[in-house]
Amino acid sequence: MARILITGAAGNIGKALTKHLSTNHNLILVDRSLNGFPERLKGDIHKVETDLTEKTAWTGLLNEIDYVIHLAANPNAFADFDELWESNFIIPKYLFEHAANALNIKRIIFASSVHTVDGYPAGEEIKVTDVPRPDGYYGISKLYIESLANYFAYQRGVKSIGIRIGNYILSEDEVSEKDLIGLADIITERDFNHLIDCCLTADIGEPTMIVNGVSNNTFKRLEISTLKGLIGYNPQDNAFELMKKNENAD
Image (cartoon, rainbow, N blue to C red; front, side, top):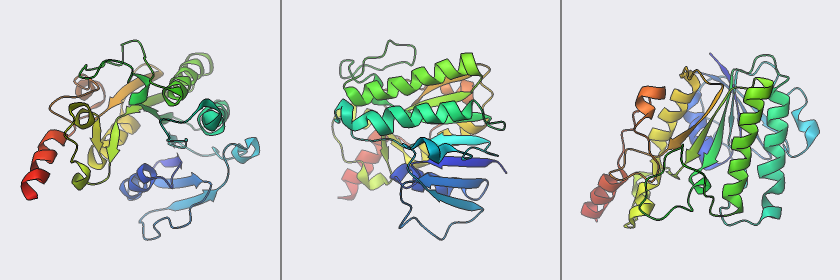
């Protein structure tokens, strides 16, 4: 079993991912507060309540850790720069600095976002090789962590995979969006869990890479056709079909 540390574990993605990973891995969950976190979870789970914007919080945190799944961030896509500074700029800096000195870290998997490229016209499918076009300071903050990953991969030997996450949904019932781009952005809980599994086990050759995170939607805002061969990602859900299913159920 791998020892996996999840930052931002109390968020919606963190909780769902904890449930998915807990049966096969030893998890260390980190957030400012883990009150109300589901208690009935299988496996070896250790909880750490701390403020990761404080440098001292990182002392010894990554000891004996195999993988880090970094979700901690201010998730407000419309936030101003000052609101994002501590969570989206300072925390990633501390993470990569301490990972560079951790002996056991095999890989960091971090949350980037579709907002790094949402400045492209509506209806255009975007590849990871396309020049970033962030749609605000939040997207800029995610490009910052992508740049950190590149620096620490090639200068300090810290391996990583960044996921440009689309519109994450926990339930199929949430799929009622009739807007093309809204549906094209969606990644379901099941597909995201599968993508994380792929990122944990993939042999990518390069020390760092960015992957797109959407489901197998009829039209995809983010291109994923190369990911099956690259890391084994084979998403099962299609937001457009889920929308039709929900409409017929009404």
